[in-house]
Image (cartoon, rainbow, N blue to C red):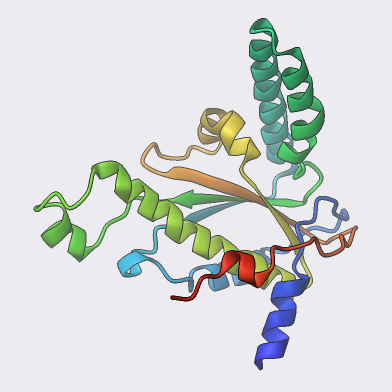
Length: 214
């Protein structure tokens, strides 16, 4: 592939929140995850794992869990006298946090514990960093894989939308529903399906605003 073709894939990818009823094949999911697993990772630790939820009932359960926790948070805010913020949480954030509800597939992206020969033989013996830093390393690599996943989906004519709302609100409930081990972090969820909308390109910061060359 030449550079212009690759750049077009990057520029045309969108976060899509509306999907057709057409299911996503297991073959397509496996192909997309194949691309995800070739992302770079810290010392090739490959700290990622994916759960592809294609059972509509389970997707609806995750939606219901997210709304339930969101309403609970809104009630807490109201009890503190934050009625306006509580209303915005439900009306504005709620639809974004549950934009996966009509997707035929939901990819739960996990970060597994960071393990490597460098950590075992060097980093841990000399206490290079605090233990929580290794959790951050797992998330970083998982995010790189998630970007591969979304670009691959777009290249196959599918659409995605990455979301952290369900994780922020209902992480414990999702963990229990999907039997996710305690040592795995839930990074994000990504809706996946055939798009029924084609959003326009959103504005981006100018290169000079985000790049410093020294």
